[in-house]
Length: 69
Image (cartoon, rainbow, N blue to C red; front, side, top):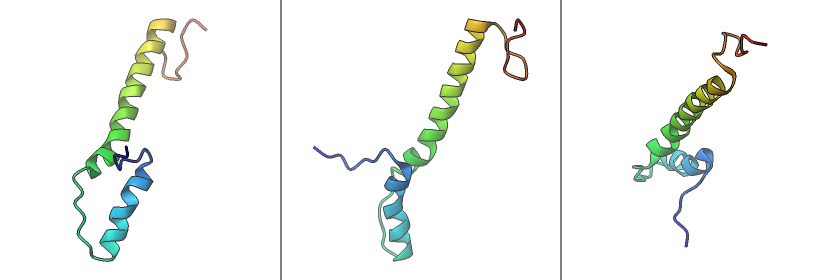
């Protein structure tokens, strides 16, 4: 069963770009998901990674290294 969703944002958004070039109206209510989803996911992943590294190695310095090294 296919849902029509794509994991690649370029693959998901390219039909909307082509439709805009040929002046065809395509409903695009899912466009924000493909634009902001990867950005929000990256920020959340970086936040989690930073805090997991801090728990494991102690506080990090500006260079990303533990002061104990």
